[in-house]
Length: 527
Image: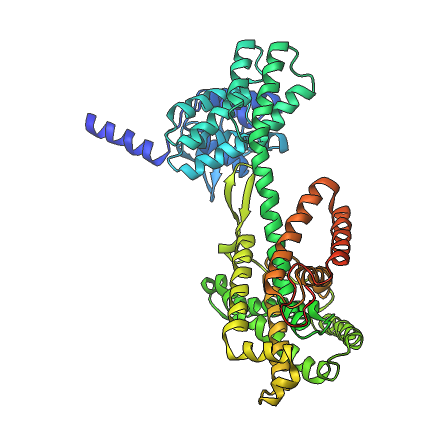
C-alpha cells in the first residue's frame, strides 16, 4: 500500500499535476483589483508553488473562469479545479478572468522566473533574458535559488548580474554596494543602462554608492567599447563586400573594356528579381523542406539572367559605341530607364519580398553587444568566392587570355586570329552576370524593387576609379577601404555627412593620383 502511494506521488510529480494552490489563493490571483491580484501572484512566486506555472499559463491563454467559491481552468472543453486539479463539471454563472496589459506583463515575468528551473538550458537562457526587464524584489528569492542551483557557468554569471540588478535598488546600503560591485563585472548593455539610470536620475544619493556606481560604469563601458569597435569594423567589411560584388562586374565592363555602363545597377536588379522568381517557384512547386535551398538554385539563375540581358545589350547597342565613352554613357543611361520601366510594368512598382532561408536567419553572438548576422557573413564569403573565381578566369583560362589580349591591343589580337567581337560579347556578359550575382546577394539583406540598382551605381564607379581602372586588386582594396571608412565616419558625423566626406576624399585623391591606387603596368603606363 505504501509503495503504491509513493509511486502515485512520483508519477504525479513527473506529470506536473501537483496542485498546492488553495482555492483562496487561486481566486485572489484570478479576480479582484489588479494590485491585489499582483500581490497574491508575487506571494505565490515567493513560495515557488509548483502549480503556479500551469495556472499562470492558463491565465495568459484566457482559460480561467471563477465564481464566488472556486476557480476553474477550462482547456479543450474540459474544466478542472485550479486548486485541486480534479476534473469537474463547469457550473453556471462563472465569470472569465480578465487580464489587462499590466497583469499579462506580470504573468509573463512569473512564467519566466519559474522557467529558471527548467532542465533545458535554452529555456533557462530565454527566461533570464526575459527577466532582465521585469525582475523585481518579489522574484529575488526565485532568482537566488536558481543561481545557487545553476550548473552552467555562463548562465550562472547572468543570474548573478540579474540578482545584482534587483538588489541595486535596495534600501540597505551594504546590499546596494555589493550589488554595484557585482554589476561591475558585467558586459551587458542593459547593465550600462541600469547604472546610468541610477546615476542620472538622482535615484542614488549616498556618495559612497555613487562613487562605486561610477567605477562600475567605467568598467562596463570599457568592455562594451570593444564590442562596438568590432561591430563597426564588421559592418564596414560587410558594406565593403557588397560594394566589391557590385563593382566586380563594372571592373570588367568599365575597367577592362572602357564602357561606361550606367545600366549596371539594372543588371543587378535583374539578378535580384531572378532570385525572387526562383524563390516563388520553390515555394509553389517543391516540398517545404526544399525551400531553404532555393538560394543555391537562385545563384546560377541570377547569373544567367543578367548575363543574357548583358549579351543582348552588347550585341544590339554597345558594340557600335566602343571608343566613344560619352555615347555609351548616354545610351546605357537610356537603357537603364527602359529596364526599370519594364520591371515596373511586369512585376509592379512595389518592392517584392525575398525571404532568407532558415540557415541564413539569425546571427552568431560574439559578445553581449555584438551579433554577426548569418546573411552578412554569407555575403562576405560569397564575395570572396566570386572574386577568386573571377581572378582565376581572367588569369588562367583561354577566355581570360583573349579578354586581356583584346583589352591591351585589339588590332594585334585580331591579327593573330582572335574573334574580337565574340570576346567583347563574352566579356560584357561576364560583367553583367557578376552584377546579377550581386543582385542575388543584395536580395538577402535589403529590399528588391525597380530602383534597387540606383543605390549602388555611383558607389561602384567610385570603387573602380579609386582602385585603378582594370585592376582587380585595386577594386578589392578600394571596396573594403571605402566600406570601413564610410562606417567609421558615420559614427562621428552621421550617414549624410559621411557620404559627402568620402566623396570629397575620392575627388582629392584622384586629383593627386589620377591612375588610382594600382596603376596599369605597361609600356605606356604613367605610374
